[in-house]
Image (tube, rainbow over all chains, first blue to last red; front, top):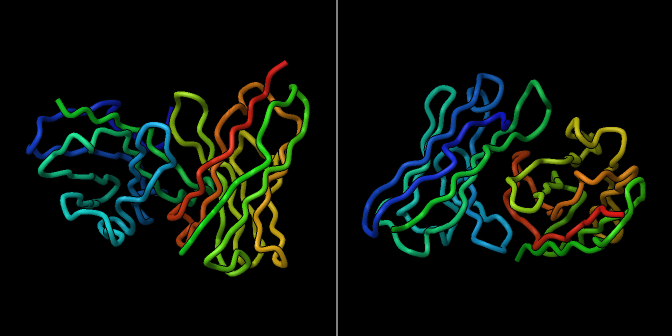
Length: 110
Length: 116
């Protein structure tokens, strides 16, 4: 049972917009930054979003992040087949003094 | 360019020990927060430990008392000493540079398999 809650799966067709949610609490998302990661099969995770809504250089602007209260979300617009991957949210937890991850969302592009 | 290369993984029996190493280039380990994150086969990401630039360390409850994070400033390396290994410690272990306590730059990972 992960501290941050994500839906286990999501799907969309090419060109669509999909949103992945991440729910936490006041000790993690409510008081700290949220990061989002993309993990392609057999590879290391890669940061997509940092500081709730910032994109590292090289990440397409099709990816966007937002945070409100104790929840965060990742939106992917103009869905492409290469977006099929696992997506994880993460935040520092002040009560646990550690990083907490969501359980991951497997995105399928139909 | 930030580069992290892990090594030291392998097959070890339950109760055994292993030391993982992470060679960093493109930045200075000692002035950064650094972490270890693991991923069991077919499972999600699990944070393991962090070391602050000032030397403060934190551990996940699942590894506290068994794993030790450290660094060698002269070699610009991060380490994770794994003791009293259990079957459930089997995972790919990633080293990460964590500028805001969250992993931002990741290595490619090293596989630790605990099996008799």
